[in-house]
Length: 237
Image (tube, rainbow, N blue to C red):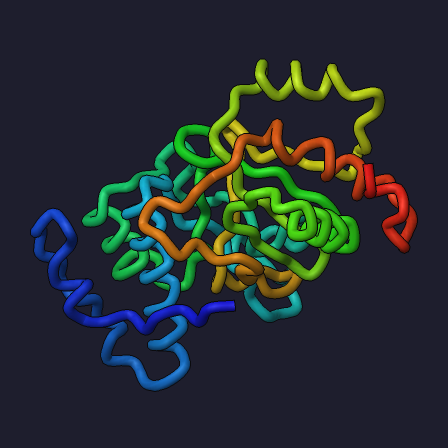
């Protein structure tokens, strides 16, 4: 897996469109906190440059009153959900993104709003590993892939709910363990700090506009991987 390039101050001063951005005050912070915040800002700016709309989300926090910055002690998705601003505010404007993570909420998770320019489908990690091996052996093109402690998230081209419904209707059976991140959904990008564990790139986007496969080319194998025994014997269809 490729390592994230360090954020350069020059990238904050000027965007690709020539707009100058002010340097955030936290750049004067020492060590780890400064690097962590710079990494989040760099991730948000890179996603926006790809055309993926981003918005600051809640983030994981230590403490006795819960593990999410939203303040709900029973938060079901600590550090991994929209909070303030709402998901509808997601933007690709570099100046807005730089202000969000540079000034307003520098520790916030980086959320990508799905539906417009990118979507995703996710499945349990063990099934995801089987599916990735199947795609590798059969030469099936796969785009960027995220991994959490429990799930694999495959980024795909945008799809509508009607298109997804038609694809699922063609399948004899669809496991409930598959999740679909389409219109009005979101993804959490690394190195966001969640309350359930780290988010990382299994296959990072290495291009300005990474290839995003159609969900129709992956769905059959993802369903098979989700229903296969641990040895993956039912995946060879």
